[in-house]
Length: 128
Length: 263
Image (tube, rainbow over all chains, first blue to last red):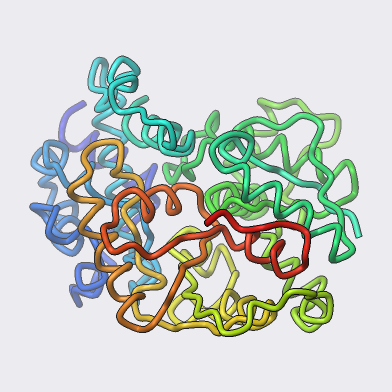
């Protein structure tokens, strides 16, 4: 996919219109992963708006977003940054061979108490 | 009162106490959780991408079974509740998703979001009533200072979950009062513990957990309660401050005299 096709896909599967953002920064203020993202939520939205999608697809922030929905809850314009982050991650992971997590990695991180939920959710989030 | 019940993958294995205490307490309170005869793991994560259909199917299958039984659908696990409730919202409100899911499933009667999805805590609040819970308590947890840990999945996004005030919730505090203990309100109770990241690296999760646990302890909590097995694991395993964490159903069963919380 070229840049404009990726942008079209991200817009369609996220349902987010980044132009609604009024740049108040509330999403970044609410974000518990702020320090773990090189592009903070308000910047992420702005970069999608200006078409800088390649940088976002290769940023570690698409994996450190906790999907806690604090930004979605607190956005006064219903922009829903978490949906945008998920969509960029999905577009990246849907390319062949780009899974961020592979089943062969699981045995080494398992411990006796680790809930199934941890593994299931990681697979849902990090591979296609 | 009978409810269709979706336990979810973790409640059958690592999170058994959440399930077992919840069922016992339900019977003591006069309602029954009737496990769906065939349920599949909900996937643990709500698929936000609008074009993902396959990842919504197991939730819709459970919702359809509950509808056909004529019962409301109850969950105990925060993640299952989150996924099933939001997928139900999609089936009600998103014509494109509804159409694709129904074409795929080929049900006798298409599913259109008819089932009412309730979390166990909502059953206590809205169907049983906390006053009634209080009347049934035989061993009140008098003098115990308990902090409610809400986390993310029960509360947000509130326009879809409709569970409680997302910034200043009270359902767990009301629950704590009903079982005779004293609720401790602390600022971090609805902030994310970072549970999803335990699988990639503990350091990041530990930072989030420390903020929550230290804040709760500083405010005087002697224990925390949660409804989420992943929060439970993360708070227990990745904290160094020694605050015990229980499933809310463990304390409920204890107060009702039908179970003992794991120490």
